Length: 429
Ligand code: UDX
Image 1 (tube, protein in one colour):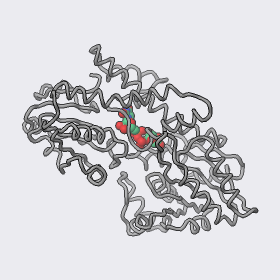
Image 2 (cartoon, rainbow, N blue to C red; image 1 turned 180 degrees about the vertical axis):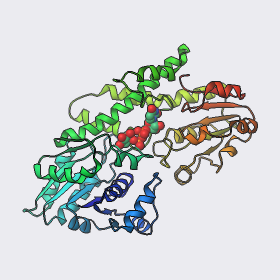
Image 3 (tube, helix red, strand yellow; image 1 turned 90 degrees about the horizontal axis):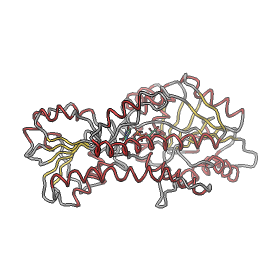
Image 4 (tube, protein in one colour; image 1 turned 120 degrees about the vertical axis):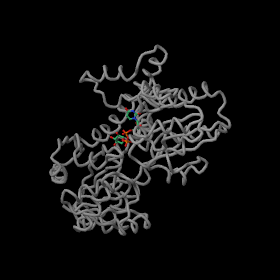
């Protein structure tokens, strides 16, 4: 099938590439000419495990190409996915202007039946608006259907999530569009759930909010563990053994960040408010998440007293392991706070440093994890990179001035760290 993906960011690029991999012919469209030129030259603008090889292979097989022209995408494709950004606004709602603009441009080019699929994460009822917009700007006889097909990709394992999904959800209002969507996804051999447009959109916001709620729940429990001397890892294991609960997303730590959870939770609160419901439960999820970083910094201050002029090393800037993404990263927030308080900070991240240097130039970075530890009076772990677990901690112990470690992601084993001579603090243990 011929497919166009409008927007070649994390979601669009991974989705388009995986569609090509299973045999569709895909045109990825982006209005950023520099990015398209880069992609055409074989350079990948993001770090995502496995993506580069897949792009190269499918370009060579002539199943994947890149353009800046929406007209070309619409003319040559039966199915058009909208995967443009939906950034947060000051009041917590999402900015839908990119989705609206793309809907208008698609409308102008429709000359035969097309399925327009909303892939971007959007508030419930957006699909209806997209359909209205296309109807308004398209030729009066234009035939099309609008579908909602939310993505459930985790950065860092996006290719795997797309190739082997738990479920594929799409919301449709026509049998014709349903059959086409089924043909698009049949090669993935995964469970397909077909709903109405609004339910599909809600599934996305409700899923991400529930996962964030799980994280805030265990983080609240971690505070009780610290106060009572219990161990949050054991509590999470005991809870998670109940199939109704499950162990995943019960890792206590500095809280959630990234380009999805913070935005999706506030957008869900906002759209609920507009629909007449005050989603207080989710407001509390946000409050707990914000306080988790503060509780962590308090431990540091309690130990070091003043942070000013203290040499502190930080491992981790990305919002989680296996990604170079630093958007809404708790690690960045903590680093900036320490710099504000006058600490002599040096930070390292396996993939997130380039973006950190560009976007947060006040955070001093070094290109080696051991350089972070040199003469440090304390070391912080802010991101759950497996690489940090595998560092030579005996060497680190030797490099530090005072062996204080604050592990914000419970990456290391407390007993082992103590036996190596560290004074070790983590979350809820
Ligand atoms: C998320 C959803 O998982 C995905 O389905 C959706 O499509 C996009 O949003 P992503 O933002 O890539 O994906 O990150 P995810 O792996 O879900 O982690 C989000 C944040 O939660 C990270 O900051 C991570 O460190 C934190 N987290 C995750 C925890 O603090 N504890 C956990 O147990 C799990």
